[in-house]
Length: 259
Image (cartoon, rainbow, N blue to C red; front, top):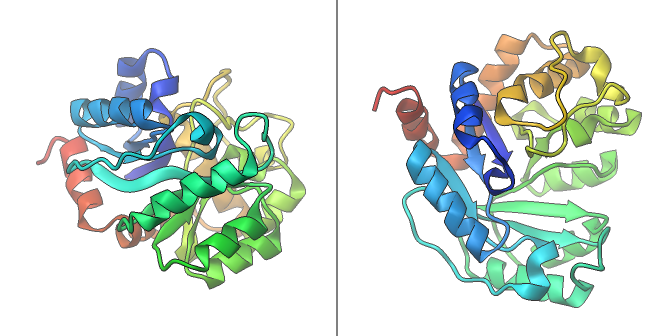
């Protein structure tokens, strides 16, 4: 069983069909909240489809959102939260930092983190906190990844992570015990122009991404690291259990209709 640690369910259409395909592929998606309203919608879908979700404020929504903590058995982490300096027209730096710190001050058990062109500031802010976190959709440098790993964070790899040769080098150097994978669907579909495409054996040609395509990411990571997919799937599932705890096993049983 694979866990897709990032599915933007509120950005998707034909949701019933997408979930059905995920079940056929034995892939459990975790739904992402981007602001208060989308977090509530993610909660709704998590309850409907018997999975988990994150609730929080994405940095690009910081300007127009206030962090309101959610409490629900299916809430597995606060997020998506962090910093994004690539698109400052949506939210200025100081506002992003303020909202990010408010979410960290909440002292949740886990955090689902976003960082784009903001590594130094992210690490500076995180240095004041002791949290358990995943930095998802990683597109930074090898050295930045090493710094995250040294601090104990997990790193989420998706199609955007393997777009360039430097991205492949990041995956090559990422310790197996810090590795998690994701689609970040409906975004980050692996394209034929991506450096990692050469490792895919079974490519699905479609415009948008979905959790059912997570095995493409698994194939690429396995190809880069020279590990058979079955072995890699077991390693990643173990990492999911370490980060998410017993709740992930409960959801896997629900997903398989065994609960």
